[in-house]
Image (cartoon, rainbow, N blue to C red; front, side):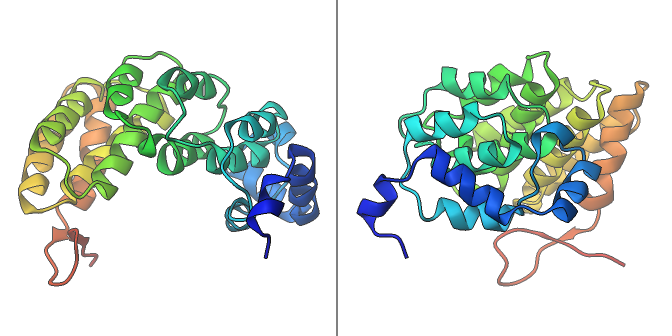
Length: 240
């Protein structure tokens, strides 16, 4: 195991070498099939990236160097190395401008952006953005917030549902999938949230526009199966 001093001495070159040592062509081909840009991927499983990250002290300068390599897995690692306490909203938006795949977008939201103080302002800002993965990030971050923030205020839930309904007309696959995901995660918080999310989904499912109807139907498939289970913090989707 690395000591704290050893972690401090890690360089982007050393970390990139560690990633390349763990890479495989089989995993790279699998990642490409999932939509990861072929030219940027070297083929390292995400659990391995998390393991490497645990041996590295958080450092924005080191994370920026990893990000600047353009290597997909180095950017996944950078998301775990950035210090969310000192990352500015402007830098978060700048990172998204480089994103070219849904998995890097979601990884940033789940592991980094959710930990930025005041992240909810980014959700509203990015929901109005035009680039695909910046707009997806608004709803991926919303989904992460609905999943992990136990004390999410009622005002936030209301805002989330309003933004979901307003932006459910985006026809891009990676955007409308994230909108549906956010709606389902909001609904899975508790029975009252499920009922409110289902009301939104039903309105969307009966809407004239194809993207809205798709989002509504997609979310309803899970919302209609969500049940309270004793001992579970969130509702459970019951299949069959």
